Image (tube, rainbow, N blue to C red; front, side, top):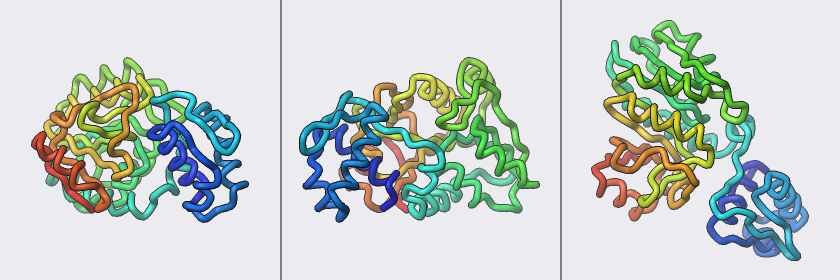
Length: 255
């Protein structure tokens, strides 16, 4: 397990349990106690944890570590590729239009685009745009706005206004948390505002996220389960989580 992946796991545990014990984690993850202490030091610097004797406690109930782009690229990489390949099956036919959210999984979706299908693709994500511009079959439109350093995506009023004028065939949406009560959510209010606009801009909404995002809540909700048409997730998604989505009329695809 990469350090970034391990730290993300610890951050999620803190959110759920409120406290972590170094000895228990070292045994469970098969690493040294010193490795866990270094991970907790990273979380403390990020403001997620406060170290105490024998472990750490959460500093805020609804905050989770947000890794940088380079870290997120290597976390669950093979799983993200599977999700991207499955999500690509939901692309519209030739001549169709897509609005693409930011995120490493959705950036991977571009690698699965059929090369012989003409599509109009709209995105606010700089890494996604850099990939799409090399594809002759894609008519690329990049949304303006102030670029956020953590996500490398445009945000703010200009981005939201541009999305308000769109009506695309499919929106591919990412999230860092999903629950029945709170829907899809994020710790960033600006990101939530853009994602709400993304949802409104499409006839069909496809959310793509792995099963670790279930049963998590962040402060700012941007879509309820009723807003979604399809969820693409992995085979570790529990029957309970899948049933909750289907109860809201959501098609669930497990990759």
